[in-house]
Image (cartoon, rainbow, N blue to C red; front, side, top):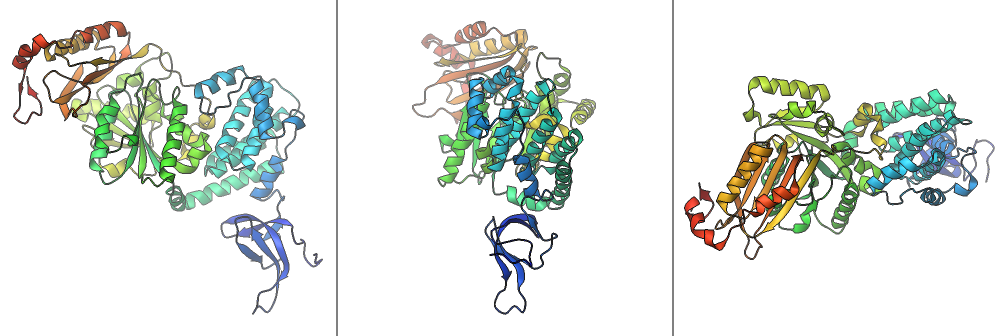
Length: 584
């Protein structure tokens, strides 16, 4: 049906201006009139989101064709129609492009972070077009994490490529694809940076409109920040606890779990070495073992990052099955860079749809942080990355430093991060309203400081001189020998020992003996009772430089108690009446 009085026919795909902006739809009626109306209106439109609306005036101010470049939908359609000789007909689908990439050695498993980094190094520059195709189809399908990631990979390869015909146009196009993905991630300020670069490289009405759109949206988002946070509230909040070895992360985690017993959290523990201790220190806070997930033998920011994605998806299934959960707490190893951990929540679309980062909480050890920040390393300085990326900085162990030292700590930390909230603490005790459910993380803010954040294949390089020595010993230990072993470690290795910790079974002691140390500063105490039937074993973890694992384990094995040592053990400590501990 057609009515020449009006610009469009029934069935025409259009964009209509409504209160919240331009919306896509299809014209279903012309000369539409409802009972009781004196006059008809030009169009009735069914929006793609479902509702039926009417257009009161046939004006470009209110209704335009869907492919009009001045609207977001029109710009998106134009961008998705991009063509270039490098993009062949045979690869014009996401699956076809993926197959071609696999032939070139690209890993299909997006959770294999290490494999992805190595594969990117080996890919030829011409593979940019395959990633560009994938990004376009992912954008069209609403997979914004994949679109941003693949656009980023295309840009890396384009930078590596020698000049070719219309190279700037290709770079501009890929930047525009990533800009749209960032818009959908509600990061319009970062998107406007990509749009501006696109228009600079290849000036056009399309890219100029895209830049104006991102700027307008940025102003709108800033004005409606409260509403954005309400939308985000529907996702499960994730709090990331980071900080260098021995700063007090596990102490903070235990404090959170103790103080917020009415709330239900899933905890993800990451240990640098093959033997875990931290999970033993928090597991007694939970009734269900499934609420504590331990990820050992690798750093969560690189080696076991794929495991993090799998773990989050497992938690997502539990929630979908009816499990009540108020949030997820991730405690990273002290050697982790928090940025790649945060990237996980944008790189995978399933994770992005179910979880949101609530805040990055960095625990700072006031006694040692200045030295840590100044330390020259073979790879990244993790302490610098942890401070720079924080939403909240907990200046911990303030009782171990004087006022002058504390001011120096604040000064050094502020140089790296001038925006994060800074809170002074002792024993990691803090008003939990300052660290939980704070809505502190903003992708837009992160991208303004580090536009490479959406390059999900960046490699995190640890200092190879730092290693972890972890082991488990069966049986109980003699207290006297254990004390001598620890004393030897502190005296001979203390300078190189960043972190020492363990859960130990002492002969004759009813409780687990937990010790922790940072360099030569040592502390230990009996904690919870060994459960009936629980195997009494001792777990040790030492992290530092120039460690000899075989020698350390051999010295520890010499602490294992023998039956003939019982009398001597009784002389070394007398039990308190309650059986709660010992007296030296």
